[in-house]
Every structure is written in structure tokens, then in C-alpha cells.
Amino acid sequence: MKKVLPVLLLLAIGALLGVAGHRRFLARERAAHLGALRLYGNVELRDAQLAFPDRERLATVDVEEGDRLAPRQLVATLRTERLDAAIAAAEARLAAQQAVVDRLEHGTRAQELAQVRERVAAAEVDVANATRDLDRLRKTTESGASSAQALDAADARVQVAEAALRVERASLALAEEGPRSEDREQARATLGALRAELAALRSQRADAELRAPYAGVVRSRILEPGEMAGPDRPVVTLARTDPKWVRAWLPEPDLGRVALGMAATVRSDSFGGRRYAGRVGFVSPVAEFTPQSVETEDLRTQLVYEVRVLVDDPHDELRLGMPVTVDLEAGAATAPEPGDGR
Image (cartoon, rainbow, N blue to C red; front, side, top):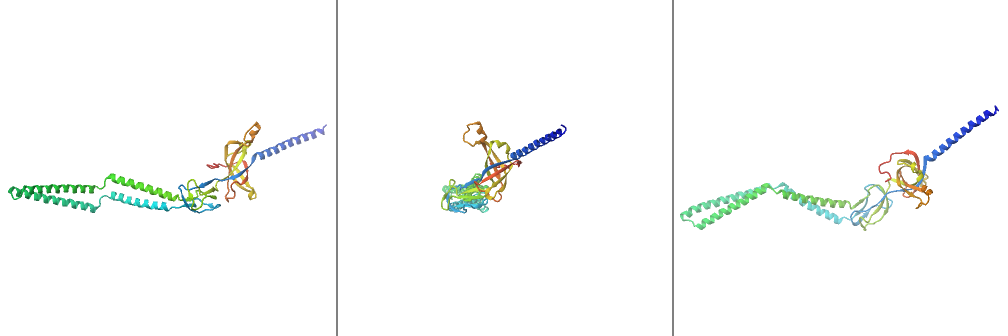
């Protein structure tokens, strides 16, 4: 009996150690299972159809399908003969109105003032001469040497000369005062309208050159030179190469294991399993059913959520629609950038 007790004790200790080891193994397996999450999806890109804001015939299309474009790179141009003529006419009208404004701003020239003053002096001389003639005729009329008719004519000449003097003096006052403020304001307003008209034409001329809004790849060339382009007729389709993301579907039971900014690894079979760093940029707030309708409570587990994983692809190797594998690492999260995945 004494020999059996130590054996039983050793067996009990071994059993306890075995149970503890098994529990540790199960815990490691569970942690490994919960720590990694594998999803499958496809590479997505944003693209845009580039079009002109005005209707006109295409002059040139400077890109081909597959070309990689830098931001602001020229894509296509419109014919601008009529627009260039309209700009030239607007520039001429603006120059003419600018001359009008300058003349009104500067007022009467010194030479013009001098001329008006000379006319005033001449009118004063006429009044003086007419007045002397009238005085002489009055004396001779009293003695009977001149007729009353001659006296009346001399008096009329004095009145005419005085009226002419008043007119010239008024002209001098206007010349010294310069143009009216209302005329200057009207001329400035007209000049501003012509400037706005020219700016609109020049903006339209700039819009006759279609440029890439961002770096990308030409997916399709839709129009050719000579065809009519316009807002409803795009010239090319441009795919944006940055950012890229993977659209994948997350099962509902795993929703609590994914968070924004979680680190991810993207693998593509097209490049020998090459890995690309990424992060979760978007988790849809709306669930979708794998079947179109739910008939039993068991099918609730087949709810899926759209997940977008942003991918760093510095060499631009991933292509639109390419199938990839995404491995998410639980707990490995980085702060999401503003607008990630949107």
C-alpha cells in the first residue's frame, strides 16, 4: 500500500500537468485563430470621365489608352479660332474704354484751358469795343449827327457781345471744373464690365485645354480629333492610381474583430505572392445578406459587411479587379487618415 501511494501521487501530478498543458495549447490555438482574419476581395480604383465644359470640335487628343499621366498633363484641346477672335475684339474694346476713363480722370488739358481763356479775353474785347461805339453814338445822336436807328443797332451789338462773354466764361468754368463725377463713374463701370467680359473669354480659352486632374492611367480613349466634344461627351476615362483599395466582405460574426486603422497585408497571386502593406479604411455600417432573403434564424450568421482595405502600392503593380487575399492582424491598428476609404 505504501508503494502504491507514491505512484498514484505521480499519476495525479502528471494528469494535472497534462490538463494544464492542454489548456495552454488550446489557448494558444484560440489566440492564433482569433488573432488573424483572412478575407478575399478585389482591387478597386476610382476613375473619372474627363470632358470639356463647352461644346466645340476637338483639335487634338494627346494621350493613348494605357498612358500614365501626371497631374495637369495635357489630355486634349478644342478648336479656338472663333474664341481667339472674340478675345481680340474684347481686348480692343477694353483699350478704347480705358482711354475714355483716362481722359475723364485727367480732366481738361492745359492747352484746352488756355484756348477757352483766350476766347473769354476775345469776348471781353468785343464787349469793350461795342460799349465804346455805343457811347460815341449816344453823343452824336444827341447832337443830331447820328440816327436813333444807328444807336439801337450799337446797343444790340453790346448786348450780343455781353451774351457771348457770358457763354465763354461759363465754358471756362466747366473746363476748369472738369468732367462730372457721374460721367467718370459711368466710364469706370463700363470699363469694369469689359474687364469681366474679357476675363470670362480668357477663362473659356483656358478651358479649351483639357488636363488631367490627378495622376492616373488612361483606361479608354472615347473621342477622336474632329468630333464634337462637350459636357455630355467625355474625351477619355482616367483611372486614379492613388489611392487603391481592396473591396472585401466580412462575415457578421467577425465584425467585432475589425476596426478602422487595423493593419493588413494584401497578397496577389499575380506576383508570386508578393505582399503589400495596407490598413482598414472603411467598414460599412449597413449589413447585407449573402442570400437575398432570410428564412431562418440560422441564416442571420450569413450577414456580411463591406470592408475597404487601403493598399500601399508604390510601384503601381495592382490592377483594377485583380483578386487578392487580405490578412488582418488583430490589435495592429494605426490611426486612419481623414477620408480613408471614402
